[in-house]
Image (cartoon, rainbow, N blue to C red; front, side, top):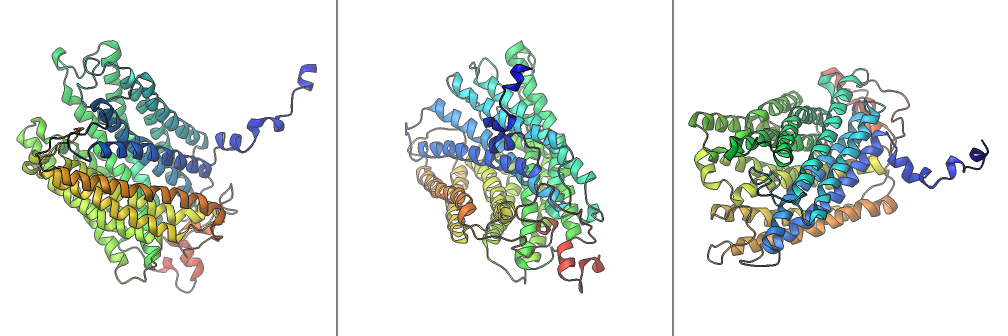
Length: 547
């Protein structure tokens, strides 16, 4: 008892300050912000790895980066951008916005929400701990067997990579279960499934996909870990295993993963374009149905990544057909977005700029995807830089454009301040032009025969000019990310007060204060239409009378 009397009060301990408050929080908004910050840090790291690769490919037969280090950069760049940048940044935005859009106080499972954040971060740290073993894994981010077998990857770096993805995958699964439950169980009175904002609807289906796509990847990672550590032979052809079983398991996750990333970006664009065009979204029901179609059909197209492995003609025909079919609901969305902005009163703020950039770039990405769905063409282009260009056109030109649009759109709500429009425009044009210069020439070098995953090339192949343009474009893109980070940081102090609803928007998050209180809403709202704030602002012409 005497000892206890001399212990310092809890309030005086150093970890009871702001840092302790954030580390121990279960508030969905703070967890969302921490997801976002974590993703930005990993985005910078992954971007630095990409710049190193582009520097090496600037000219033929360069020796700036050794072959093994180049392969390590390639592995960690892909892993970082997909698992520790793109997925967390989308999880962070969903964590913050979805409960606000459905009129909820918090996520359904607040502590599980925090667990998902810390598991994702810990998984990323474990992955990067592989550098401490003498070098990161040099297996490529999709880790094709038998390169991942102990015979060909003897370092413990591959084991840390596998463990990191296992841990972060559990974090993704917990977050997905939480968000799906939140949308199904915590919607405010009057918000039926047919009245959910399109961003929430698309984030919901992306997380449904996570629930079904992550277990096959988890199983594959456990299998390769058993091969490496316990002498199993799941992917060892010499012992009766099947190396291409890994490809089936990985791509059964890997192709839905593209839609796991792009559906939330679709949702952000579907919220931004109507507000900045001053028009109702065209064809809400078709947009919602197309989302469900994408979520289901995307699980039936995975083997179009494997046309060259020697599957039967029947299997090739099926996956080619399914790959063409999945473009139909995406095309529906594209026409709906164009119909939404057609004839509208455009407000050309940063969210609209990035929204229009998304429309133009994702259209091209979709068309090159249709090209690769044709088996004879895929035979010629598989494992070439054309495939790299298509994939990055989707990820950067589509998903990242959508993320920037959503980030600027909701920045005033999260911070209570407006961002610098001038800096945002500088960022857009540097990013847009740099993007075109980086990934456009990759299509050409791929058609000319440049294979992916090579660290250098001879002088007589005709690839030098296109690689130089790509590298120049990458160096042009880099300042745009610096401007973005500087903008969101400096605007915290210098940005004008945003007010509760600076965009004159229509969904429930704009009915709260900026930033929202811990409890989100003083009174749980009741809605009667898809645009509840429009109904409040225009009682003479409410939306519900048309629904």
